[in-house]
Length: 296
Ligand SMILES: [Fe+2]
Image 1 (cartoon, rainbow, N blue to C red):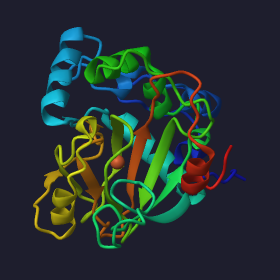
Image 2 (cartoon, rainbow, N blue to C red):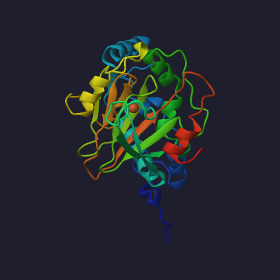
Image 3 (cartoon, rainbow, N blue to C red):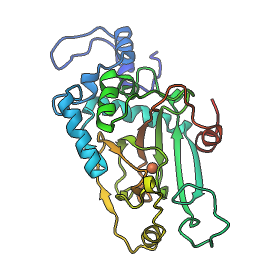
């Protein structure tokens, strides 16, 4: 009797004909192959995106500086993307779902202002998340995150001097899930940049919308009037369209952004690759409890 497995490859017996007509022996080898890490050049399209070339990194930096966003479509190769999709789908059942009401400034309510003042107006963010410790050691996401060439590229593109993983076991690589109706409300980021990789796109909704440089943190400019106009629907945001496999670097500290509600029954799945500029930094315990529902 044949053992049951979710994996159709493992259920096969005999020898398998590969496209180059080299047969490989059955189960044991397939299992080993399955757990091997993909090399970086099988994950990233390095011919289109030569991330190790300083001139490419410099071009990306100039785009990120001028546009506030860098979009690299089809950054991830088809097979690696399929693996990421498979891993994300398997992890879906473990995801911690939560919803928060927050201001666009992500600050506590200001008792000196009315509830309808832009500093106090509330928006909703709702999503699911799996954490770094749920991402496999053999995942192409982890290979990409750990790759020195990728980290050097991100440093060049963002102008950061150094990049380190989070010290806690949860926060470095996350996969986010948004079901029908779930959204990320308008907000400004606390971090200077974010790296995301779209894994699965819904048929409708989940649009990434933003208004570039709506405030100017360095000058203490909060632009309440501009934020109020956006929340009242008087400002038309830009929409960033992207397909699965697209890498996005986004500067969200001064550019307000949101992800509109998912309007389909296909889950939006997005990987977030997070680094710190200093070693030994953990995400705060309150943030971990809020977004992950656990500390470790
Ligand atoms: Fe954000």
